[in-house]
Length: 352
Image 1: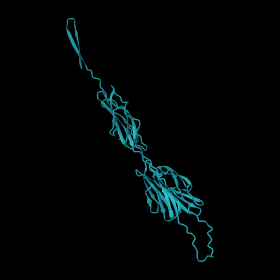
Image 2: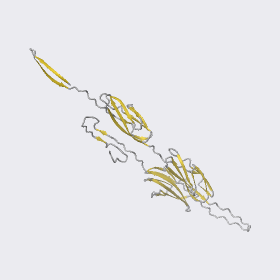
Image 3: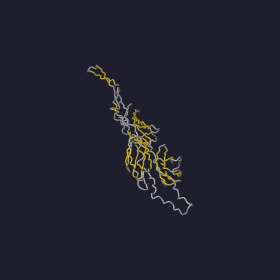
Image 4: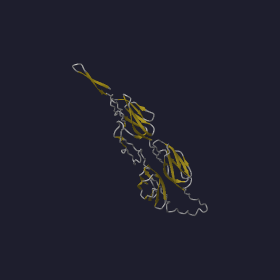
């Protein structure tokens, strides 16, 4: 503060003085403005994100940058790249500092989700699908697949026996039609089941030897050949997915010694079909044990089962979007905040 004086003097040496006060203030340093952005704000682990802070500003120049990625890591670069290895929501902070030590911080939210695990796909085959007792069948399940690896196999031979091997052999001792199931499990417990139908018939008796009278002619054989049961084979693709799930079914691998005359599909959701191939859309989540019943011209039938797994659509986290009409000023400072630009796949229900 300067008390500036003016002193005037006349011809005879008389003087007078007046003072004016001049106040000179240092130029006020304003805090810097942090500006943080990211090339992506969501994804699955491991999520690599490129952060940009070089758009931050200050009246005299920014001297320091400090990133806090909220997972124990950070960076002092204006622009930084970081990989998030664990699922979670990270409020990543950028703090900028000017030459006089004033700071400002901005936050950007990064949502990291676990990699979605998909259910395994059971694949079953056998070296035979019909025969007479005792019928030994070699089953193969090692062609089953999963995105991370199949960890368990469970065979149900439908006669009280089973196996936990990927490939298994079993002997059927009783006649009947067996919808043999293979259920495979992955490391996170997701399962899938496929079925193969095995038809086991009684062994035909041979002609009895008649020693009582060699002069009696044996009875003539029946002029009518024995009718064999048909074999039902139900195929579907895809066998799992999100609702609404459209599945193409076909029974083209079904067979009979003469001819199959009818096909009946039951989708277990109240809908049916009666053609060799058909399409059906499952609109609700659930496990559907779809059955195929085939009949030959003499009315003998066979059944096969295929399981369709329908999951609900996965919900994704909302994305918050915040903006303001100003980021700096003097007291009292009124700021208008806008969050209505936030988005979600089904709709946002709360703001805080």
